[in-house]
Amino acid sequence: MNVLVLNAGSSSLKFQIIATDLERIQQYKDDRILRGEVDGIGGEAIVKVRYRSEPSKTVTAPLRDMGAALDYLLRYLASDRSGIAEIKSTADVHAVGHRVVHGGETFKESTLIDDRVLKGIEDCIDLAPLHNPNNVKGILAAREVFGSGVPQVAVFDTSFHSSLPEQAYLYAIPYHLYRRHKIRRYGFHGTSHRYVAFRYRALRGLAREQTNIISFHLGNGCSAAAIKGGCPVDTSMGMTPLEGLVMGTRAGDLDPAIVSVIARKEGMSSSEVDTLLNTQSGLLGLSGLTNDMRELQAELKEHDDRRVRLAVEIFCYRARKYIGAYLAAMGGADAIVFTGGIGENSPNIRSRICCGMEWAGLSIDETKNQQTVGKERLISTEKSRLQAYAIPTDEELLIARDTVRVIKGESHPS
Ligand code: ADP
Image (cartoon, rainbow, N blue to C red; front, side, top):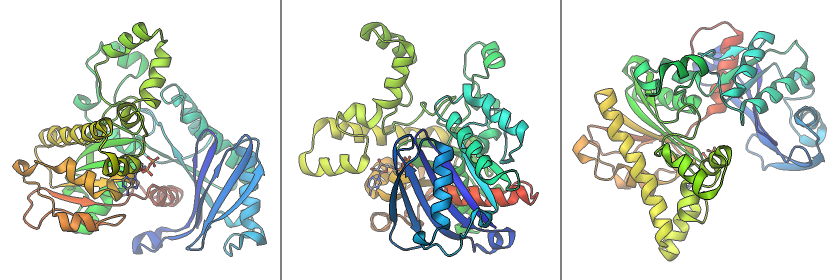
């Protein structure tokens, strides 16, 4: 089954086509045919497609909206000039899997999309006003292009965290606010945390119930999850992705009184402060330079700028505090797992986060750690009681697999 995986943003559409089915999943023989992105939708858009291991091809076209982008993309993929053997028409796409950011309390697992489900996703727009509308646009565009004959599945960023206990998901605010407005912790990056938990137990030959890890997804957005017996018991992102770790442009945890202080002192509205905390803070706000960890590290090597140093130090310190908190929340863990652009590719940051954690039985093998960039590997010493792994994430693979499993009626996936 050729599954088109879509991740629709405000003016972008990331996509992959992965051939998979229940047998291939079992044998780990999923076949990634192509991947790419349409950028600049709404104007002169740039379409980048990489077919297998060939160099990527780029074409440009004026694409007014998501529907036009998907329609153009499929016509391009099916054309001779793309050189893609497997896709000769839209009929060669057999199912569509969508990344959907917020599933609220409604969607506890990946779900086949019908009108009722689409309405449910729209109802969650209130909880994720920046993300869910784009996901809805992606679903509607796919309906338009493929018609009702091609099944579509929604895979939610929140659903892996649906097992959180009340003590982890309730905020200590008047309870009626939870009842009235569903103000609670939902958690995000669920597909990524779920994928690395799955790979961790595959690497160690463990059952789901034996999976006791603290996973860190460190990319532009960053989150930690405490996974006990295979299910999250706590996670750092909250009702929105703003809470928790220091991120590229998000502040993470802070005293909520600061919001009204900034509003008053800077003459800003609450939604302007919200934007400041989401887009001007984190590594960017502290360093005053960039949200990009790689650039910050390059800058440190050259100039040892004080604010850049502070940004990186605070990023690592705040992550380390979550290790301590989650060890307590879980009653101990077996491993720390790092993923995401920073977690997969920056030995230095992993090392700094784990620094001084010998008291908890965690010691990093610096040789292995430094050699581990973009690959799966144990990076702690043989003797380390609390192990550490780097595991590249693959949310698209999990979305493709869930799409197949949901269509085939297989109940809860790995
Ligand atoms: P997103 O959350 O947008 O998917 P990614 O997971 O791609 O983002 O992560 C982006 C972050 O990873 C950026 O801060 C980038 O600088 C960082 N990163 C990627 N490679 C490296 C590297 N080799 N060293 C340090 N940071 C890196």
